[in-house]
Length: 275
Ligand SMILES: [Zn+2]
Image 1 (cartoon, helix red, strand yellow):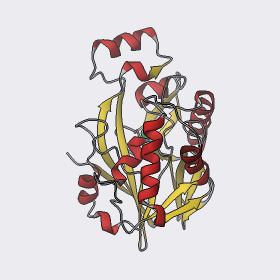
Image 2 (tube, protein in one colour):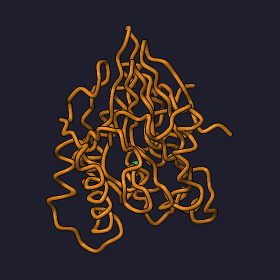
Image 3 (cartoon, protein in one colour):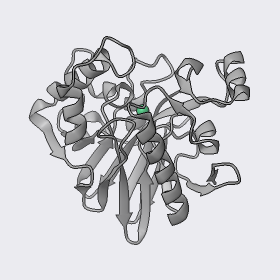
Image 4 (spheres, protein in one colour):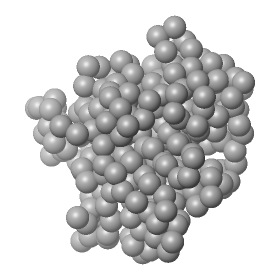
């Protein structure tokens, strides 16, 4: 089955690259209804808590920008297929001119490191928002699994593998002509998406506002323990869903299922993907 979905926004090509898929386990989900909690507990491959791990590729002129780099082997055998997805798009790691991280969580950065700790994308300038980089390098972290010392250590290992290639960007800066960063704080302090505008066409990447879109569209209060500031993440989730509904913006995101590019509308309960 194909791992890529390719669209054009004016002159700019955007390709969704599916690194993998998994069901999110019940113990990392918050604010579930009793019915949903029972469904998920009864079947670990249930449809409610399905997620995908997506990276994206933006091609424009001579620029080949990879957005996020997948999970490598960290999330089990159904994830870690970024390089296959890139190959399907006709891109080898050495072709990537720019690497942009929406944030520094493992499922977004692990695939940028070789097993030996080197840079997979040797020719790429690494673009990271200042607030995100300083959070994962300045704080002290507890020895806990989620948002703890291991995740910070991985973020720091990636930053050091690309130390000579890192470019600071701001959370509303320009990534390339027609592609701008979109600030979406909460999930992590420097969490961002991006927006493409070209020839009167537009598209937005919503970062990690949703990890289990089936449930979070219906009830945005459903959350995961991965959000560092849950209250700010909820505010960002609702603000972005309201904005894309009102503006009828084509959306994609890091954990969207299929379709990879879709409009989102307000529904009688929460929001719904419009095919
Ligand atoms: Zn993520």
